[in-house]
Image (tube, rainbow, N blue to C red):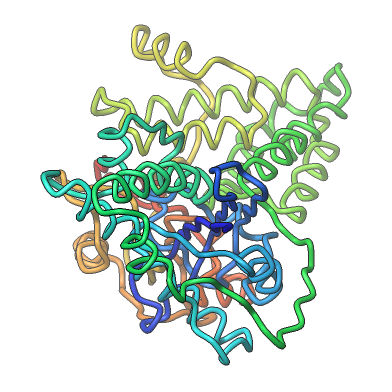
Length: 423
């Protein structure tokens, strides 16, 4: 008998409320526990991604990933002729069956053995039956929690150990009758045509490393010597850089805009490198106004450093700036835009915290209103700002804002523009 251990990551808790699968991980094993096949892919849900802080999946990761319908045949071909196993199977199957139905496979409904239920029988004294708790109890490595392939690999080991424990206590016949009888997934009269499409986290990271920062590539092509005419244009260039980095994305059009500025102002390789390092230093000083670099701020600094193509050691630079607390002659508009009277709309689940609590939509709107902004419920051409936790958000609002040319601002940037100390 073969077993397909599956795990899915999702945008939320309810497919009936529009939540979608954003990652699928399957480990197929034989009766001896040997891995005979794997499937691991991110899924583009064409909507916001929900709690990125939990699953770690961001908009740029799913932007080029297949949608579920494109890989439904791939997933079913792995599950076919095997018994499906999942931890808290009711959750995973509710999403799988919903996505398969939408994709045209509404003639059947998948079933699975649930390791959570199996654990409650074999280990009745545990205080909870979360995947992490079982891994710790059974001494099983959970390499990266809430990454579908690693969760499914851990679940496969849990399943084998719990199955053996149940058989020792109750006998193999009782195990088979209770859990495996009638559970084999056999897709009769179903022609499957796997696409071969997949984009997993490892591939995404590898592609990201190969694709250097657009700005780093531009700087590398600049002449080493200054034209002598760039001195009076440096502040103007920094203002443009400020504007481009507000959403923490550098598009091809924005890259071309900067390239034109390099040429027009005669900025050299050394000058551009200095400006980018200075820009990063100024952002660090802004975040150090309260003498603390929060986790959210540190992640933002890492993102800006990568966008700028700056090679400096971030931890060392933060320590140096904290010690010297010097100012720089180059001026920047970071955090000082005039926002009073401007309209703002929020989309997706926000990730920053304020006074120890996660900022929800109501709190975000209250903070914005207190600082003189006008709240809008939707996106139109008259909207001034759309605030997103994830600049690559696939939400309907984000897509509409891009199509209308509405300015998109990353959440951490927005709160700092208002002078609100977020965590």
